[in-house]
Length: 61
Image 1 (cartoon, rainbow, N blue to C red):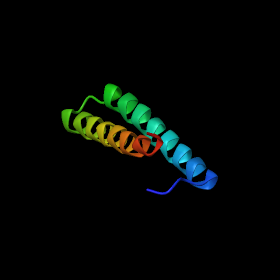
Image 2: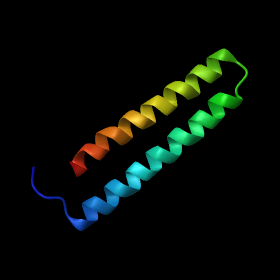
Image 3: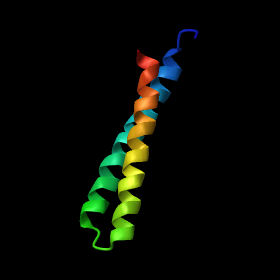
Image 4: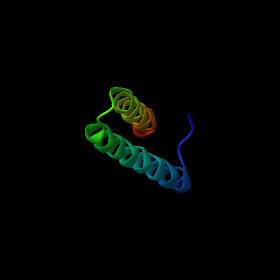
């Protein structure tokens, strides 16, 4: 793959930060949920956000 431009790197950093924030928020919501289905929904959402973050991090390796 060609080298990433400065703008591409800034965009990646922004996206990665957003997924990190989403992961943390979803984990907080899951820990506060009393309904098992809602808790599971937030846990799955948190897992998805982390997976997306990790995929984007691969561009830096």
